[in-house]
Length: 163
Picture 1: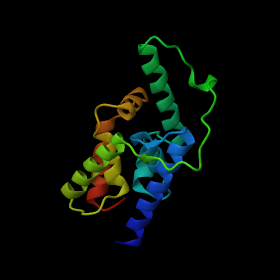
Picture 2: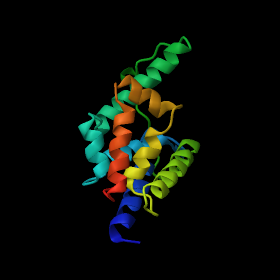
Picture 3: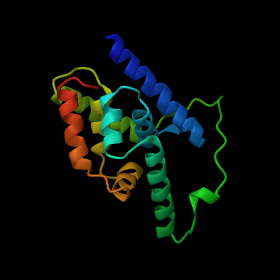
């Protein structure tokens, strides 16, 4: 395993886990991986996300809007900004959630299809963007993101080995 690949995996695991802890979550879900990708310094995935207007703060804002809208659909009016923030639990080690397991499977499929054997950040971004159901696709749609165009960029980066 190359040092670069090892570093990317290490940062993603630590980054996504740290994001889950910040949320007070017991599970690392796709939104935590997306936030970690946006914060991954020097990666093609972060450049693509930022180019689409998806900085870490913009992703957080989109996730907050999605949560507010989902609750509103159930007749519950909530403004995330008015709620207390979660208390991070540094002792907790969040487990891999179902949405992360699914995105990793899609990322592996993308890595195989693009000629690489190893999963990189671009493959993980494709794995996130290939989801049609769930919190992240709804948040990206609310943010006005062209997921198909961003996926095409991520696939091209993966094909070129730019993670």
